[in-house]
Length: 71
Image (cartoon, rainbow, N blue to C red):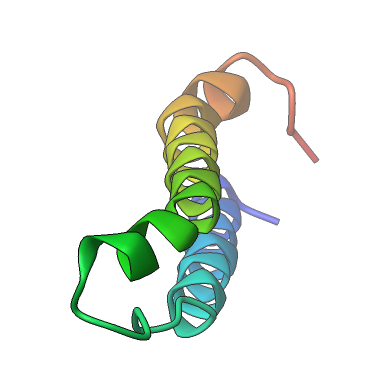
């Protein structure tokens, strides 16, 4: 498998992961602050998940160039 194909596959997998994560986010039930505070832990969890996916995406070229994923 060439490096270009591996990068394209990795980008596709990450795009699917992000899409599934977005589909799981629910609209807040009410317009008041109390209903939004109830959803705050879930939203913070999603934010941390997005940061982790972004970090993996940003570090993937370094792993590929260093021979970590050479096939």
